[in-house]
Structures are given as structure tokens and as C-alpha cells.
Image (cartoon, rainbow, N blue to C red):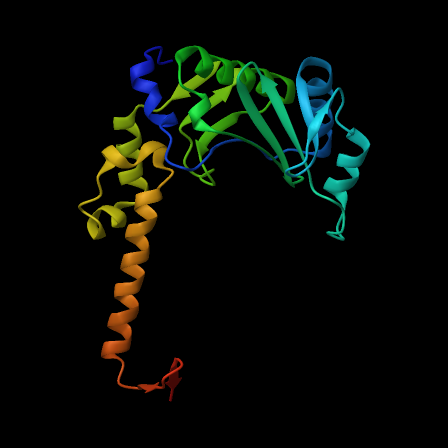
Length: 228
């Protein structure tokens, strides 16, 4: 495990997006274990999204009902777990995946980083499942892997992450050779997404230019594209 904060902090450099933590392939029994643990061991805020107030207990019965509900009519709740000056939000998006998120600005020191690792390790122990820490909505690209059963804590260095990203996305490097990984904090991909948008626009323009079956009708109010 890396114990040098200088090699870790790149993951938590703020860029406007969040850091996600996932436990995958879970069942309702895992949710029950987790919520009972949080109720017994942590200060939590629980309630509707944007309105959660401090309570001493998460409503387990409601959340089990919510996770099993198919109507989509139940009110969405959120849990905020308070660990000193860190807030870890717990979401209920899917019954088979537990998702937390944190603001990377709160992980500004090695001590706070260790608090996150301790939390992940404890949840991994409780559920007997690995946990991963990723950029926002990037569960396919773990930056930190924690598996209590294997005594495993694996943290990618920036160089390792760059090499792995290149292996997984070789076309990205061929198409976008000027991507500057110095600015791709934790691969939350803010700048990368801008590059992708530009490529899509260029491809769209090229398609319109080379397709002889496209006819453009221009008016003062809008442009209408008729495809013969």
C-alpha cells in the first residue's frame, strides 16, 4: 500500500466533480447489515434529498421498502455519514449496488485519506465484499481497491492510472494525442469530456459535408434538416 501522500493526493484534487465509492453485486441483506452498522456506529443525517436533518437513526424499514419498490412513486432519501470533517453520502439508486460519494475537497490530508480507507475497509469486512473508489460515475475504472478478506488495499499512482487508461482506451490516445494527464485529476474526465464533445461535433460536421443525400432548408427562425 502507498503511504506517501504526495503519490495519493492527485486522486483527490478538486475539479468540480465528486469521488464515488461502490460495493457491487449486493443483496438486500447487505443493505440491512450496512444500515444497522451505520445506525449503531456513526453520526448520520437522514431524510429527503437536500433536506436531510440530523437524526439518531436511519429508517431501515422505509429504505427496504424503497429499494424493493417498482412504482417509482416513493420519495428518494439520502444518508450523510459524518466522520469528523468528512461527509460521506449514501445513495439508494439500485438494490444491487451500494454507492457512496464524497467531496474531494474534504480529503486534503493523509489523515483524512486514512479515515476514508478505514471506512471502506470496515464496510468491506461487514459485507465480505470488495469496495472500489473511483472518479464520479466511473465504476469501471477503480483508483483504489479495498478487500478486507484478502487484506488488500491497492492504490493506483498517477503513472499507473495513465498506463492503465491507455491500455483500456487505446483509441483515445490515437484520436486525442494532446490529452494532458497533468490536468486530468483522478480521471473524473472534465477536460476529456470536452475533447470527446469536440470530436463528436467534427464527426457530425464531416457526415453532413460528405453525405450527398442531406438537404438543408434555412429560415429566419431555425435550421431544418431533411433527409431524403
